[in-house]
Length: 390
Image (cartoon, one colour):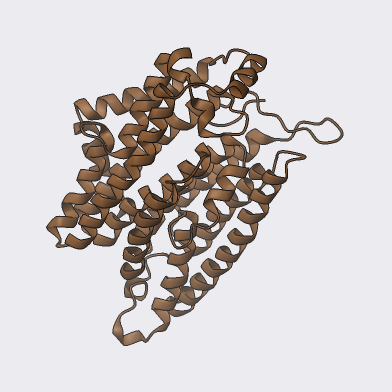
């Protein structure tokens, strides 16, 4: 039975030996994301959010006998249930004031002065719930533990699918701008500083995703057409780079997902090491890679709209974040294998990259390279998508 994000045969067997319907759960996550993008009223938005949330809870806790996997599933379920309650309460407030469940509730979402303080409360609760789904600071506390404890294919789904779906609905509901600015600034700081002392690849990617969410939320907070388009471009590039990194990590079959397990990859599989190094350096924003272009497109409308302090903070945080990306590249090329790791690799045997993993890595790297050489297609596509969000 096939599993998500190029993970090969990823099976879960109960005590009876029956195989769990993992592809059905993955399909429910995808369907929930599509429904969330297409939703036009609060009830369908709530159901579309809960469908992938419940599926991801099961997928995160699917490793039988693993305490870390069970802990990841419980944390995601408990905190997800709390934020779902906040979201539902906020929806109830807006529906009661608007007299209907349609998302375009006029000025009620933005809370004009003539309706008191209740509409901003509903929008506040909805924004907090959506920021939790995006793993944005200060609602990020679940992400490192869940990313690390969940199976790697599930971690890839958590890092990619909810962020794409929540982005579209976050634009539509008219969130509270000051809360987005706070989330953007805290995400930049937490994402850049939190990953400096991490020794596991998935925890590092969790904090990396928090930092990238800071750039995306900053573009949404500015609120102009150009800034929202820049955030959409950034999100698209982030998704492509995440697919590449998680596929390469899956192809290595790491034992405990420690960074040192990647040592010596450049000598054993130089093409794979080069692909991972280029993707990591692109995430760090090293020019002229595509990550630098994504950061530039978000910084430009910020400077134009006089967000000078946030722009300087974003640049400083990007420099700090570049330290742990470069550290991983150093491990790939310049760190020798430990004797224990050599023994584990010898017992495990050679890694075989199947066709699906190879295609995912190749397509993601091809998209990154094409964006560097000719970004016009991505710019035009993001322009059309941004028009559709309004």
